[in-house]
Every structure is written in structure tokens, then in C-alpha cells.
Length: 114
Image (cartoon, rainbow, N blue to C red; front, side, top):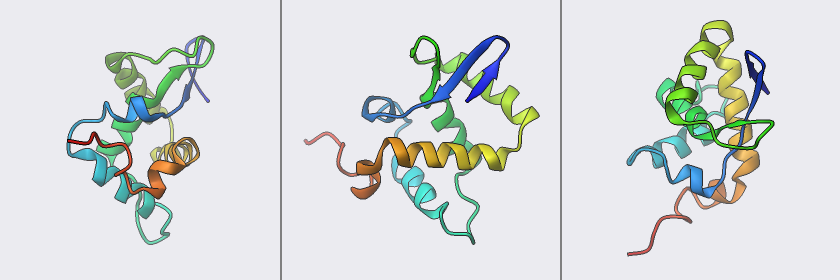
């Protein structure tokens, strides 16, 4: 999906990765993702886009998640040379494909029970 030098990277989401989002961003991300399908809205904010990119980035060859600092660096390089709106669409579509149950539950299904 993305290449940096000779390495190929992809974006993948799962429950464990999503739990690593900073506190308080979960509900906002869900609203933005759902809203991104409304043609009158811009979609993911830059902050949410970067958070999702950093959490979802994996080395396509090894299947291993890329560390936060390295992924953030790749994000910065990618938005310098690519259309950020295209990246928004790619991240949104990938999130919805990988986590349909999360969207259906409005982000509430995976919260720890007290």
C-alpha cells in the first residue's frame, strides 16, 4: 500500500491496536469515520488521521506493527508527497473494512467492563 525506500507497508486495524489510541479520542474517531461518508463533511481530522495511521501501520512483508516513532516519521513523509485527502479515504475505508463490528457498536463494544 505504501512504500518507504525498499520497504512496503500496509494499514491494518484490530481490537488490540485500537485500544492503544489515546484516551478520549475513541468517540471522536468513530464520529469522524461515520461522518466521512457524508459528502458535506471533511472526514477524519488531521490528528485522528495521524493516530490511526500510526496505530495501523505494519510492515507488509513481516506483518509486524511499526513502532510509533517510526510510523509517525513515515506519516510525515507520506503527507509531504501525497494527497492528504486520498490518505483520509484510504484510512477510513481500511478501518471500516477491518472493524465493521466496532462501527456497528458505535465504539462501545470493546470497552472494559468495570
